[in-house]
Length: 466
Image 1 (cartoon, rainbow, N blue to C red):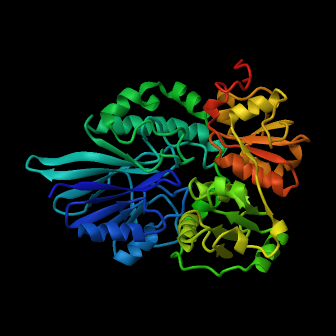
Image 2 (cartoon, rainbow, N blue to C red):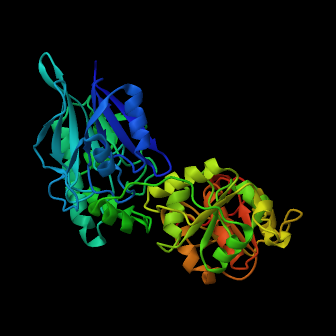
Image 3 (cartoon, helix red, strand yellow):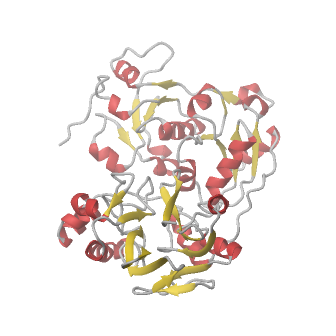
């Protein structure tokens, strides 16, 4: 059987893991912490996992590699240069790993995203010898971009950017144009310098499209460092967990909270997170909660916004939604929510006065409100608050808007000017989260639940690009 590479996507974090098999045995690359997905796929294909490999010590999620190797008895390949708190098979640049008679891995040192980053060339045996099928590139060469180089500290970013350039060039020189590129990052993860420009790629395509292979080193370094935006605060805890050796996960249901307990937890300053869609939240929600719907990257924003270690209670329509949220949260090291409640807002309080609405509007309504003709039922727009990231703001923003990126908002609520606040982002997801924080602080808010590219066509004045 020909070698097959299957993608295991974790879209909520913007990453991919891989299972490569020859029909009998399999290699797993950069697995997420919820390893049951990997075990199911291997069982479905009828293959035995014999090797688990890490391209690097991850910064954006807690790895499932150690536990997967324990469960399956697989060899666990981790860079020899990384000092870790567990047994592994140490590998370095130039090593070759025999997976089966028909499959082998070649270890290529590709520093840049981290100092000890490795890529793995997947070779298949043919009558004429070994043929490279592709390369697992982790956070090195991505689709149209590369992994960012500042996650180990700004003091290392320039040196690592130069190494990233050299590493990408090395892969391009080493492999034929037809070789597949299989990165871990680039699909929404803040570990990538920018987002992937394709859903799959080859070395040849990257030579034509990727700046790291088209620009001289100094120019590439200047450009990559100039475009880097903030990254989630919880990243500080991921490398520590992965170096120590993550514990197995517990995805069993957490305790159920009654209305009294929900009030007590909010009064104690804990986070109670409403996982429903933002439109349902706007219609009716429990005062004091924060909107982070499961339809968006909930774990990324929650992990970024909270003080690490703060107890979290989850609210949802169904137990299945709570289970989905638990799965997402363990991937970033939030192992056990404090409690949960399901069934709908009317079951979360004994006092109807604790339920409130959150007005929603679109950009045409904002244009009308700024002109003094607010649609019926909506207040004037004293303040327009943009909670997008800095690079989004720089690319274009509303004239007169106040900019506070969502991750900064919990500590900068006092910086929002007085008056009614109309909050927007790129689509409405982050705006609803930000508006819920403001409402909890006693502010009158309106959520602009609309695509930002609709602002200018709706007649909202934009700032001069200069």
